[in-house]
Amino acid sequence: MVETAEFAAGNYRYIRGPFQYSGGVAAEPGFAIERVRFSRPLPMVEGFSAIEAYLTAQSRPFTSFCACELRSPAPFTEAEFIAFNRVYVGTLERWGIYRDEENPVARSNVCQEIETPPEPSFEAFCYTVPAPFAAQKHAAKSFIISGSGETPEGQGSYEERTIRLGETSPEAMREKACFVLDVMESRMAALGVGWAEVSATQVYTVYDIYPFLADEIVSRGAAPRGITWYYARPPIKGLDFEMDVRCVPIERLL
Image 1 (cartoon, helix red, strand yellow):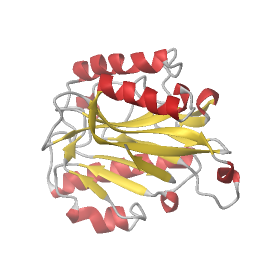
Image 2: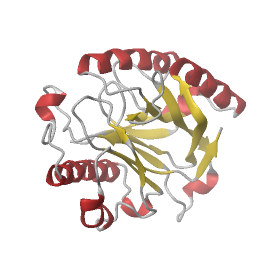
Image 3: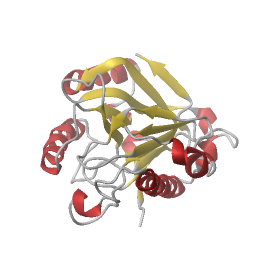
Image 4: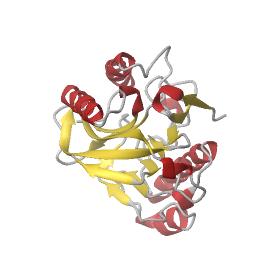
């Protein structure tokens, strides 16, 4: 069951998830989400410092930080992933965002196959801003759905839960993609939005998506503004397909 909660200090709602990240976020009425992409990926420590400086310059509290996109050198083992995330949430805790294993921040974390960063780095981040127009009847809703791979959430290891583990045939990739598309839809529904409102669809895989692009992705309305395909892998060893979606009215390059 998909549960949502309000993060009043950040002016957004979120989908409850594991301690590492939430399933997605949506700006509260009267607020919108803005996205900032770095001109080059910034290592974690440098990236957090840059985000602090940017939010301070925008007169926004650190709690307005609501999503980020990370790039890692290579897929993690489960133990490595947990260790990395414990370090990551330390800053969120200092900022007053993360508390008692509850993390409202949405996230994608993928591994570029080519031109990989030497260490986990920030590609982009998002934050909320006051936006009176956002409460108007016909204004687009601001939301971000976290990246998901082909692994159902629940008990057990990633290896035990992964859809068609180790298989990368066209049929296997179709099944993996369909599972992830269903996750995107479920999360959007929890936030009261759908494909028609998506302004960006991002896919991460090193395998060919063309065999199912038309009938599984485009035909269901999952690419209303096209698709950005990154030649990258999900962050956990054994996963082959990841996707995230968003609707953000303002995007900047820093």
